[in-house]
Length: 457
Ligand code: ADP
Image (cartoon, rainbow, N blue to C red; front, side):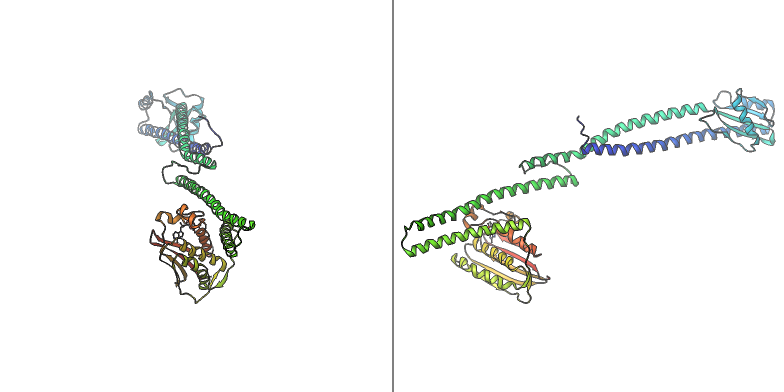
């Protein structure tokens, strides 16, 4: 298995291992201290109890048989006993005391109570306790060989070391597996985003769970889907724009060629051709206008030129300019405009564009019936509704109609001349006024677009 030292899993593993080893070391040191102290304490206590017991027996009867009996009790055990008189002369011993022990005998002289007189088990041969025999008759010295203790501690050290190594190896393995598991989804996401950067936007990222990493995976997947949608829309849009441009240009070129060749002499007919050229030029200019607006919205360069103004006159102006289009289609264009109390802080030209786009859409996507534009006030909101009895929008398309280039049915809108930019522009303008857009629509029954503007500004 190749180890990449720059990978997160390696760094994470290293960090966790470091922390774990430090914790284990601390634990080892504490455990070692606690165990050793407990063990040495136990031995000291044992030594003292036995010494004191012997001293008690001897206090009751300090004769040779009792002394011999006490020494005999310590014959076949690891502890040893030395019994002295009050002048520290050895009366009996279960060992032959050497120099080391004799030095300690002197130490015991001043002792009135039982106690440990040598506990440096690391550097001396014995741990020694001294217990005075009643009425100053003498002393009982108990010896525990320090080498036994050193051996036990050594074995304990080895055991702790081996266990620690085992635990560290086990932990390193587990940490390795854990950090790999943690970072595996990240690697999957990295690979998916790499593929996305090559243009394969739609990616399935198989990550289970619902933690932050899984959420990130979902977000990336959603981002890919959105990018794919955007790309598809853009391609459709470019096809649509080139088609939209080509059709009027063909007309313009055709009719202007005829006119320049002077084939048509009839002035009425000439005028008719010029009207067509003008109409088609207008169509192109609308399209370019939409594109221009969109690009401005996209780079965020559009600044609102706000002033206090009434909404109704702006709507009336738009209705007047669009009425002929509605009448041509046999549609009734009603207005029910109620609010005129206070002006609102708006960018008049942009608002005009909003109303134009919405009412124009209502006319475009309605074949029979009527269109009603309403304005009224509700709490701190000024509400503008554009209701039509048109073809409506399928429910699944409703959230997407605000997207750039999105058209419910591209083939249908090609006929009606849409670019899929109108509603995007509308929503951007309304939101920049801190307002909100809503839409309600039922297929084949009609749509209602509602604008909420706050008049607090
Ligand atoms: P377009 O230029 O294609 O009209 P818009 O952004 O204005 O683009 O609208 C996006 C899509 O929403 C349209 O293509 C159309 O399918 C749908 N739409 C917008 N307004 C209406 C409406 N009043 N009735 C039905 N469909 C509508």
